[in-house]
Image 1 (tube, helix red, strand yellow):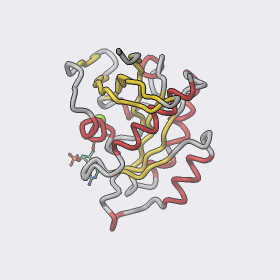
Image 2 (cartoon, protein in one colour; image 1 turned 90 degrees about the vertical axis):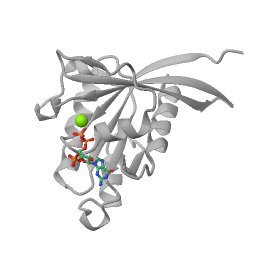
Image 3 (tube, rainbow, N blue to C red; image 1 turned 60 degrees about the vertical axis):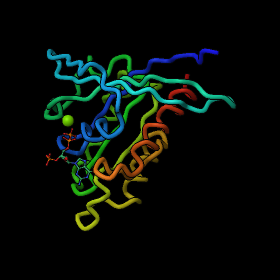
Image 4 (cartoon, rainbow, N blue to C red; image 1 turned 90 degrees about the horizontal axis):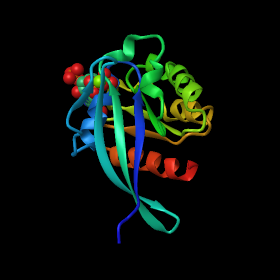
Length: 176
Ligand code: G3D
Ligand code: MG
C-alpha cells in the first residue's frame, strides 16, 4: 500500500556561520538537484523522512530552503519564507549574539506563516570549551517562542541532527 506523500517547505534561519548549511548537509543524503534560485540566493535540498502519526507513519518530503549569504540583511526576504510549513532557527552556542537574533527570525517567519511551527537549535555543541550560551538560556528563548522544542546539535559529529528535523516533521503533521 502506498503511504500518503506530503511535500513540505522548511526554512533554515539564523545568523551567518551558525551552521545552517552544515546541518542540511549532515541531514540530507538526497540532494535536490542542487537547485539554486539565484535571484534570491537560496539552495533547496530534499530529504524524505518517515514520521510517526496517528498510530501509523507518514512519509514526508522536506524541501529545505537554505540561504546562500542572505544572512546579512536586517530582515529575511518574504519570498524566502512564503509557503513554509516550518522553520529551523539556528544559533551558534559559541557566540551569544546569535541567540539574540532568534526573536527577529521568529518574528519575520511568523509574520508570513503565523501558524507554522519552529524548532530552536543551538549548534556547535561539540565546541565545549568555547560555549557561550547555556541550556537554560536556549530553553528560555524556546519557551518564549510558543514553547517551541529546542535542541543542542553538532553538524560536525551529527549529535541530535536527525532528532531535530524529526521533531519538526512531527510538529508539522500535528499542526495541519
Ligand atoms: P551557515 O550556513 O549558517 O552560514 P556553515 O554556516 O554551515 O557554512 O558553517 C560555518 C562554519 O561553522 C563552517 O566552518 C562549518 O564547518 C562550521 N560548523 C558548522 N557546524 C558546526 C558544528 O556543529 N561544529 C563545529 N565545530 N563547526 C561547525 P568553516 O571553517 O568552513 O567556515
Ligand atoms: Mg550557509
